Image 1: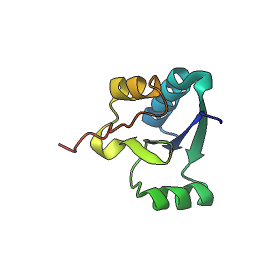
Image 2: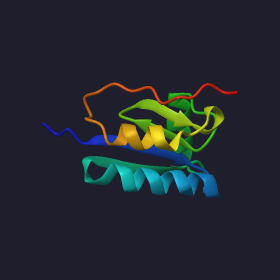
Image 3: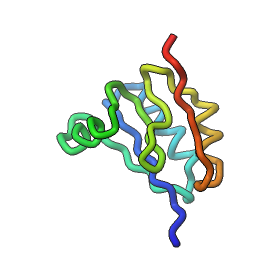
Image 4: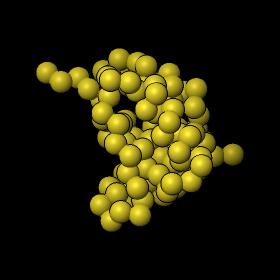
Length: 97
């Protein structure tokens, strides 16, 4: 059974997005498949809509929204989650202020 996690990063190409992409790629390592979704692409927009993403950067781990710009991307929590066992549950969303 393949236990690789699928990590999707939704990006508009801005500096904040690029920083999150760098962290995700570095922290995910070889234990995850990292997919960067450019919001200028129609398929990426459709996928974001499916997941309820309305702002970027947004990170989805195994089909579940882990963090998004509107609630704040908590880099430390993201690093921690990416280092965890794929079978564990997570909730990295930070309520908007």
